Length: 99
Image (cartoon, rainbow, N blue to C red):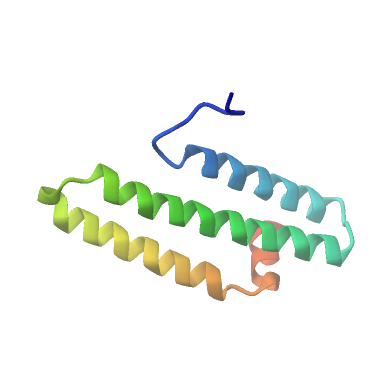
């Protein structure tokens, strides 16, 4: 029996990302060691990239051929977001959640 209900969208990946973001924010607020905060920032990056990948996969399944322009625009946005998150430094990720 599966541990969660099978879904046809990226909602599980969103939940994981939200959990990782909460963990990072909590660690920053409680002034945990920099090593722990950096590890959590890497987990946030990994979760975000996994979400983008899931959305790209879901995009190909959901949109029909007549939505070609929409699909290409969304794919382009997801590609740019993936590149952005891949290039973010750990410090920049921490900074983003430190505000």
